[in-house]
Amino acid sequence: MENYSIPIKRKGADNRNWWVALSLPLWIVLYLHLKGIADLAVFGILRMPAGSRLTETLRFFLYEVPKVLMLLVLIVFAVGIIRTYFSPERTRRLLQGKSLFVGNIMAGALGIVTPFCSCSAIPLFLGFVEAGIPLGVTFSFLIAAPMINEVAVVLLFGLFGWKTALLYVSTGLIIAITAGWTIGRLKLERFVEPWVYEIKAQNATSENGRTPFQERIAAGLAAVKDVVGRVWPFIIGGIAVGSAVHGYVPQNFMAAIMGKSAWWSVPVSVLIGIPLYSNAAGIIPIVQALLEKGASLGTALAFMMSVIGLSLPETIILKKVLKLPLILIFVGIVGTGIMIVGFLFNLVF
Image (cartoon, rainbow, N blue to C red; front, side):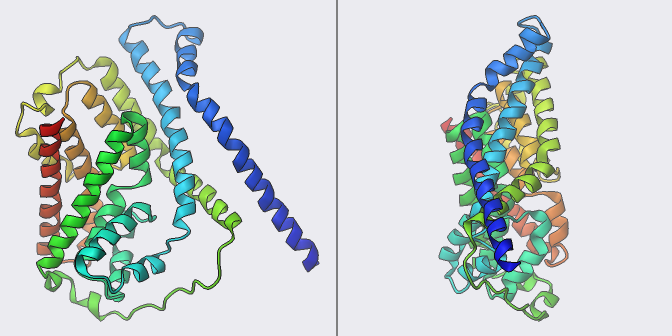
C-alpha cells in the first residue's frame, strides 16, 4: 500500500507541473490580444458608436479588468513560490542581530516579498520584539510590507508601465528604511506597551529539511486562490470608478486640484489619504484615471502611498501594542516622507 501511494502523489505533482508549464504560453497569447478582444466586444458584438463617452468608458473597463487580473495571477503565483523561502520565523532570524541601518535595509527588502499585511501587524510586532529585533528595524518591515506588495507592483506596471512601478517601489523602500532608521535613532521603546516586553518568546518553528519544488508550486497556486480571491472585487470596483472618470471627467479637470501649480495639493492629498482605507487594488485604478485628467504624478503617488501605507485599520490595531505618542510619531515621519516624495516627483516630472 505504501509503495502504491508514493507514485500516485508524484504523478499528481508532475501533472500539475505540466499544467503550469502549458498555461504560460496560453497566458502570453491571450494577454497580447486583450485590446483586440475588447474592441471586438464593444464594436463588433455590442455595435456601440465610436467616440462616445459611454463607449470609451466600457472599452476602457473591458480592456483593463482582464489585463490587470491576468498580470496579478502571474505575479502572485511567482511571489507565492518565493514566499515559501521566507516564513515568519526565518524572517525574524535574518533580521536578528543586525546593526540598525543594515537591519532597516534588510527589513524593508524583506517586507516586499513577505506575505504580511495590516491584519498581521500585532503578531509580527510581537514576534520581532521577542526575537530582540530593534524597534526601528521592526517599523521598516511594517511600513514596507503593506505599501510595497505584489498587488501594487502589478497594478502600477499594468496601468502605468515599468518606470512608474520601479519609482514607486524605490521611493516606498526609501521611506520604509528612512522612517524605521529615524524611529530607531529616537529611542522610543518607552512608548511600547510594557506587556509586550513581558511576554515569553514562543518556541521557534522547526524548519528542518528542504521543501520539494512541487510543494512550492502548490503554494504559488494557493497564493493565487487566496490573494486574487480577496482582491478581485476591489480591482473591478476601482477600475469601474476609473473608467467613469476616464470617460466622463473633462480633460485637465484635475489639474486645478491636483496639478503641479497647486503647491498645497501634496500635503492636502496626504492628509486626506491617511484616514481613508483602501488597498492597492482599489486605489491605483482611480489614481490612473486622475492622472489622465490632469493630476500630477507626485500628488497622485503621495495620495496613493498615504492610503496604502498609513491605513486606518493598521493604526487602530497597533494601538493595542503601542502608546499614542509613538503612533503619532510613526504617522508623522512616514507622512513627511511621502510628502517629500510627492514634491520631488512634481519637481522632476
